[in-house]
Amino acid sequence: MIKHQDPWYIHTALYLVVAVLVVILIQVAVVEPREIVAVEKYNKSEARLRMKNLREAQLLYFKKNEKFTNNLDDLISFINTPFVDSIRKSFDSLSNRPMDPFLVLTSGVFSPESLYFAPKTHQKFLLEIDTTTSLDSVFTNRGRFVRIDTTVRIGTKFRIEDPDGYGSIGDLTNDALKNTASWE
Image (cartoon, rainbow, N blue to C red; front, top):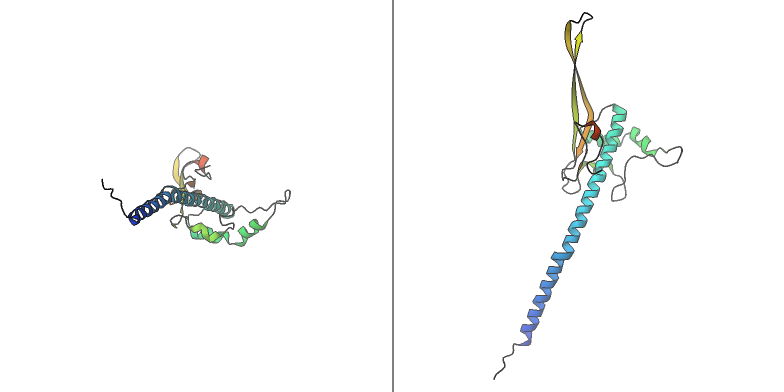
């Protein structure tokens, strides 16, 4: 009986191919999903931090102008005004804590320019405001109809939405959800 034996280099090549396949399998099955989950977690938390800062900017804008804005450029420019700067630099007299309403981003600093774009796709956040029309009938003292007064109010509610689907803040129709985040 003759025993046929393969040369050593064939076995070495097969072991090398198996080792490369194991490394690729570990990369695909373990390492890449962790990286994908970490990036997704970063994008989600960063987008929500930016939307919270946009909400705070809208509330300060409303405090000064008695209406919200649907223009992202105006809102971010407003953050750099002396009015907002004085609020950011003020301190609570009782606790001596800063009154800055803005949250630091994941990078550790607050940058108004970063509020334009969602971190995942770098698309602009969607910013909407409502338009409310009120009708009122006007009658004389004797009950005769005179006219209908129409009052239009713009910017009493706002909605900020992440284009990547990580949530929204505010609602244009429901007063109970006026400044509420969808994830809170």
